[in-house]
Amino acid sequence: MFLPKPLNYFFAKNLKYDLNKKLKKLKFFSLNIVKKILNNEDLDLSLIDNKYFLDGCWKTIQNNSSEDKIYSTMEVPHIVTDRISYGTQIFYQTEVFFNSNAGLFFIADVKDELIQKFEAILNFLGDEGLGADKTIGKGLFEAEEIPDFNLNFNETENKSNFYYSLSLYSPTKEEFEKIASDESYYDFIIRAGLVSNKTLSRKNLRMFIEGSVLKFKECLKPYGEIKKVLNKEDYANYLDYDIYRSGQALFLPMKGVENENS
Image (cartoon, rainbow, N blue to C red; front, side, top):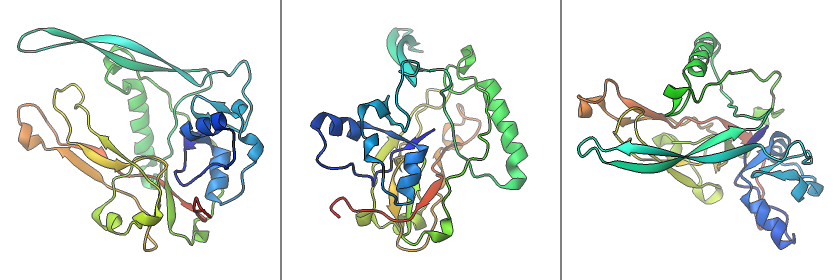
């Protein structure tokens, strides 16, 4: 299992140039490595080796001949037709194919009274499919629960007010004003895109990226908010409902954060 690279983590110095270059390009760390970073524990430096790097991920198990890929991609051509001139234009879409015993996962914090409804929604999405090509049978999935999943971190021990984001994050006004930006580690991304089955573009939303490590000026666990990006009243002939983008995120507390220069 891989989680986003915590942006506060700085790799060991005095490494070979090619190895250090590969380390900086890693986007995901294995669960065991993230646990140590969250708990402010020293990492095993012997893991900093090419045999533990695979498809932008840092593992704790060496690569072998049967596991040379986590996923592969393919550029697939598509054609879009102009509704006025009926002219066509070609574009390419990247499709992802996961290797055996590999795939996507998510972590959700669900209230007990909503679990049954949550599972029903997952089953519906699995049968319906995710993505723009779900109408031709792509994006189908079957959700499986990960048994006994635990990060082994006692949140009551967190005294530093640092939190690590597992997903994109759009803070509420109150949360944003309490972020100590000069002591945090983060980057931004602009999320936009078209509404499914429509030619309408969602309003741009600037969000903190996955792996951001934010310090808050007060003892405040962040949650983020869901923001409306299109109003159906502005597009009465095209939309039957408002369009939202979720900026809520699941955060994990950190015991301490080491400064790069410390």
